[in-house]
Image (cartoon, rainbow, N blue to C red; front, side, top):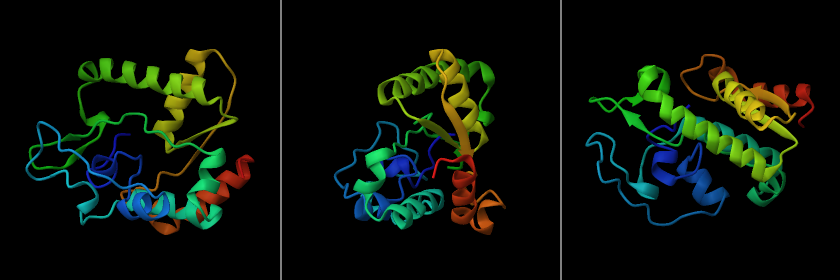
Length: 182
């Protein structure tokens, strides 16, 4: 998936809920505006008053389980498969599945190459997709590398998911425990 307008688009951090990035991770700084900014979705950086629900859920779980960001990042890394934001004329977030397949081919190629290189550089024990889309891309990247990895997934924390709205942290924890990740 691609970032939403109130998370990574504002902070540059995957699932970039401002409070989590600023207060838990200790990251804050100026964020420049893009050359072409959507008038209905301004980039306000850390001054953005909106919350990123997916990021609040994801980083909230990690903060609860690991205490500090240092403890989490000692053995974990989060990367966004496609760090590009597309918006409709109304300002609605456009996910890649809403863009023509032909237009997405070069984007998908670049994103998959970047994901494979990230895996090669970090040499992870586990690859966990946040949602089925991410899991599928992890499988493709691993196949591209010709290596074997333990691959799993957790439910995406999006508020658009009814299942995520019924206790996402508990569901994700259960999935990670069942897979042997935690």
